[in-house]
Amino acid sequence: MSAGPAAVLEAGRVLAAELPASTIESIALILEALPPASVESAIRSTVANQHYRAMAVEFFRVWRREASEVLGQSLALGLRIAAHCHAVADDKQRLDLVWTGPDMGLAYRHTQPALLDLINRAKRRLTVVSYVVYKVPIVITAVAEAARRGVDVRLVVEDAEASDGKVAFNALASLGPEVAAHAKVFVWPADKRPADGAGHHGSLHAKCAVADRDWLLISSANLTEYAFTLNMELGVLVRGGALPARVDDYVSALIDNRTLERILA
Image (cartoon, rainbow, N blue to C red; front, side, top):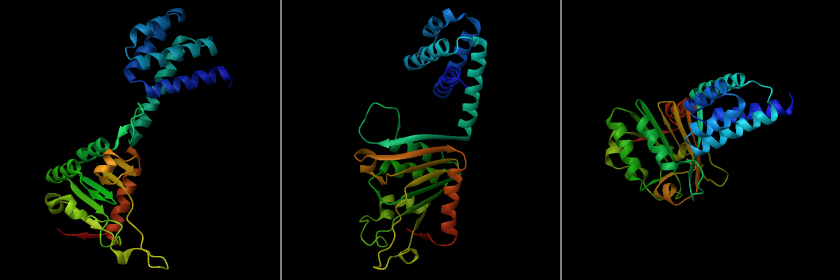
């Protein structure tokens, strides 16, 4: 494939991935109905969002510069196909970056709202794994509300005693009496952990949350005030696909073979 058509294909792919379906359809209608000389002006007057408008205009210019022999009707069909393929793939799995840190003016989801969204969406089962739990009343309230609405809540936390002093806070106490009473809280006992020749045990250092085997947050952030406000933390929010269920199944297997043991309030 020559550089010209390839450039148009790439520009169309980016456009279909970034713009809402309604905006793609508006652009496709313009390409079908108007001669090339009128398309850019029509895009500028039709697409209200400045960022989307700039991307659409750039797509038009790439088309006219690199593949002007392609008819507008053909381009419109190609855009619709690309948008449909993106929507189908998006339904199967979607990935978003999740950050805590200095605001750089870039588009990303913040860690705490992303976690709260996941917790609030849970209808059947919520699994949360964290190394440290400390001073997160908003998250604890959301978890308690999930338990009250009948969600099977499983919390896997590091045990202060089993951590050999690495964790100073009692996670069960930090979770509060309501969560401790209505959720299932698990720890990794010291006698179930691998150790090196000097007797140093492994740590429960994973941080993740799964809702209904369909939403998964993997993050460097613990369930702490600093992780949500002061630290620089990075994670990935996964919606759909096979990964959320695989993580949920792994935790279930750890519970079933008693690698993780439930503690009672």
